[in-house]
Length: 357
Image 1 (cartoon, rainbow, N blue to C red):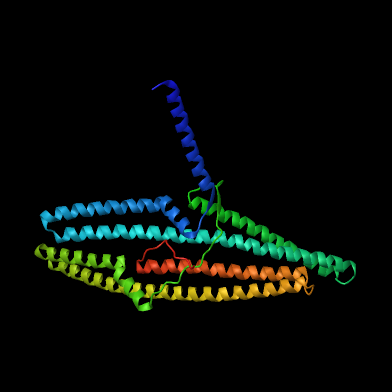
Image 2 (cartoon, one colour):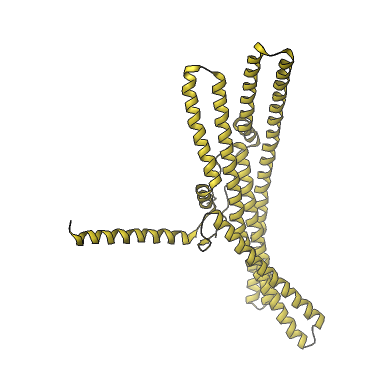
């Protein structure tokens, strides 16, 4: 191979690598995330989730080794112990994963809502400023007192401060989300959507049944009871009467603990189901209120075009509409969290939400 060809190949490989790096950089630097994409990225990048995931994989391998060894030893105790360790690792993984998902939902929603709140307060500030300018003109004509003018100036200053505070809060929320997504703070990301999730179609009876049948804590409690019974059977051979009495009491305590755990999970699952249903109803009501405020704003726009209302009136109606939108979007965020909590209780797949078309 001649030197010119080698040089050409080297230059080509460097250029290709550079283009690839720039392409990836541009992909991240101007990225728009929906909630599912944000959750997916966080689960890939979060160190605690990855650690719990690796621990689960380790437990699976150890369980396989235990199964192989148990073929020779035929030990029911070892089999139960391995199953307990595996389910315990799975529970730790799911707990870490679900906590991370909830935190991501909160942070994603905060960015969206803080930005919307900033828009609301900007309109309020503009309305208060316009009203202050109107008062200044009226004050010159003697139609508004100096006290009223000063009061309106203070209203405008308060609105300005609220807007600037909201802007700072939005920038802080955005930084937090970037860090959670494992992105550099210089990266530009966009959170433009808080889509309406599809309502889960599940009845209360089915939800409670899933919660009890799938609950890992209950399964761990049952395995723990079985292990204690085997320990008790073994100890009968050598232990004194007093030690045997202690073993019997430990079994009874363990049984009561299991019953209490089952009851607690029933209550928790029922509460999560109720909270989810209420969140869905609340979102529906907030959506209706938002739609009505949009209609009112549209009517005010038409009046303003006909000269039947002031620019200040129009800005106030727009601010009311944006506030109703904020409340509606906030209820969507609450519904996401309620759905996540319910899915956790039922041990359903979490972290992926279906959106309404």
